[in-house]
Image 1 (spheres, rainbow, N blue to C red):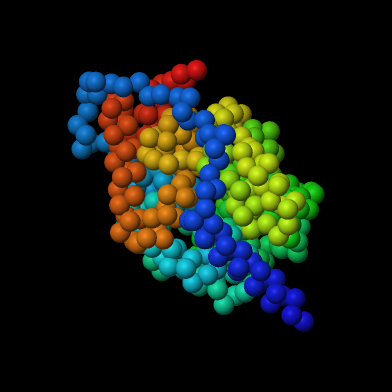
Image 2: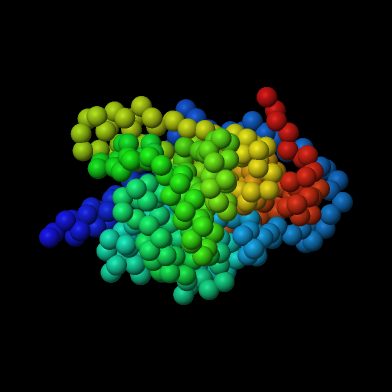
Length: 349
């Protein structure tokens, strides 16, 4: 009788733990990087441009964005998360950038916290992504639950996050990943909004991306290694020595973000592609786009800013936009399209 309540309480507590650990603990990868340091832009000392004419707007999944930025999926389900999401959504609306929320499983299990995700009222024009774990399709979730989380957010698309390593280490993790590709394909056929496949910091290989695209996924978020390590996050929540050991052992597991971008783009030239995983500033964003991504997502920098104030989030957005614009100006490119096709980014090793 009490099982559903207990499960939802566990999920909500996990959400709170994740915010606290990410803000207070060192959970970054150290032995592996996002791979972007292996590339360098060719500086143009004569860009032949008026800085004021540079345009970093773009379109993703048929929606206009003022900048190629995604506030990556982070949180929801707690009082603190509600404040964070509100601040992020208001800034996303102001700058016309995309936003995803954290896993909405808690909102399915505990409908009274659904409002912590419901940010459309703060961001009426923003490209918004709902979010559920793909593995939940093997744990009695289906089309109805996916429709529910899309409706809560009034979302433009649904992220299915794929996180086998995190589930291996997470206390009471869901580890039955059998036959998921068929269930993802069925969902893509039936869901009225696009489905985005996203890792959570260990990367998506070209081979897996190819299977996901064939299944009907509309976009890929590579979420490569080099940033927040969810193995380390879960090791901080470990309930026994084995989980702690696994989290430390696999802290630097995964495919670097740059490698994911280049290998996926090589086999799928036209799939909408999001670069995320260890991106920290606008120079990283510009490099990811020059490698072939369409937009770029950042999570930890936005989480840290949102935990402080809405002003801090706005200041971060301003800096990112200025950094991206500076890259275009100093490489002689007026638009993101020109940057992507200019050959301005060179591998240095």
